[in-house]
Image (cartoon, rainbow, N blue to C red; front, side):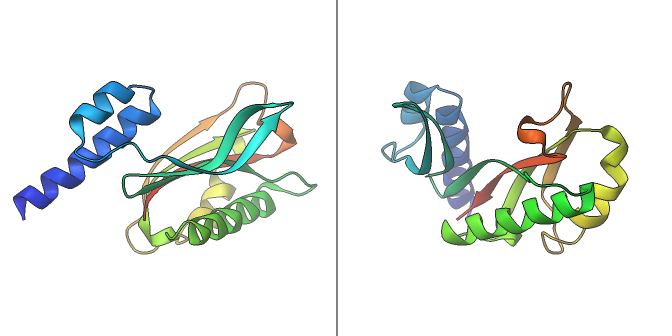
Length: 152
């Protein structure tokens, strides 16, 4: 049981180190090979810009999801969370397996309304979360953007 926990922690730290660009550390700390699987790669001209999701070491990492239509913070938050759920299902995960969410608000005054929609969407054990208001607004005129890390 203790060894199982250690292996899970090693894989988590190795994954996070790999995402941070510390591939050498990630490989040394993990007994598995680096098997990053990018999905839905977004291109800027001919050069890859980013992936909408990446799986590695039993985790799925989702890039920021925004809502790019006219609407209020509640409509945008609902859209983002539904899209997050869809992407997690495609990756073999679920909202119940989300470990970490980052929320980026266009306006901190939307915090309370965003929370009303956010509450209860991740089961009885919600993930850890960071919420910030973004200076200059969220890209693409979305009122909210979220990314997450989940177990597969």
